Structures are given as C-alpha cells and as structure tokens.
Length: 176
Image 1 (tube, one colour):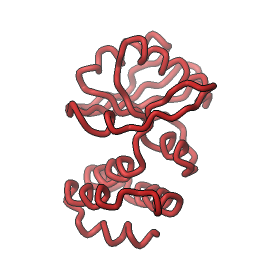
Image 2: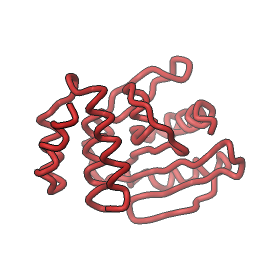
Image 3: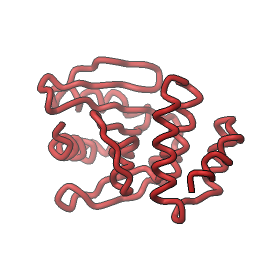
Image 4: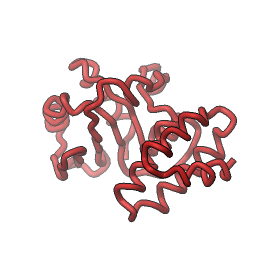
C-alpha cells in the first residue's frame, strides 16, 4: 500500500475543505514509534463532515464499500492505493481536538491521535466487537511497552471506566 501517496492526497483535500481529523489505528501507532503491519489507514472525523469525506474519497477514485452508523470504508480500484476507514464522532471536543500535530510526509503537518486515546479506542473496540479482542489487546500491550513512561495513566484509567472495563486497568499496568 502506498501510504505516503494516499496520505498526501487525503490530507491536502481534508485541509482544503477544513475537515478536522485525527489519524488513528496502526498508522497512528507508527507515528508514536509502535510498529504494526497494516493494510489500511484509519481516520477519526466528525460525523457532520461525512458527506464531504465521501465526496473526497470518491473524487480520489475510492469505492464506498462499507457503511454503518459510525464508520465508512473505502477501497480503491488500484490495489496499491489500499483501503481507508473513517470512524465518526458526534463529539465537538475529544480525540480530534487533543490530537498532536506531528511532522511527516515531507514536512506536512499530520494530526495524530494521542497514544492514550488510541488505547481508549481499542478498549471501546473490544467492548463492541469481541472478535477483535486479541488483536486490540496486542496493540494496547505494544503501546504500553514502547511508551509506558510517557503515558498519561489517569487518562487510561478514565478510559477503562468510560468503557466499563475498570478491570482492564490492572491488566494494562501489567504491560509496563
């Protein structure tokens, strides 16, 4: 998958249309130094921008293959352009606004979700889709192993409470 080409095209369009976003998932983990193979790019965006995003993706040659209340998946006709997933939030303030602007792609600013927010999203994913549990726990473990001393542990504890997984906090601490 040609991540650099895809990200460059997408970010130019998102900026042009003033669509706030945060990169999440494995690509975001990579920006924080946590490596995991992936076949797609995941974005978090506001649900009010869904129509703009769909128009951008179709304009870039992507087919809208999966749609649900909270997510869209787009796949390009050219296999090397891969797939792009958008998760949507109705919140005006949250992960997108707390994302960190990192430099990448030839000095281009990229909004990347904080590691604690990625952990929170993984906990939510475990709650919503038990089939992903092993993969999501492995991602949480990798994040903690690489970034343990730099994580906001109170924020992680709050995510455990929010997702109804208070028991998960001790398990996450054990990855240190």
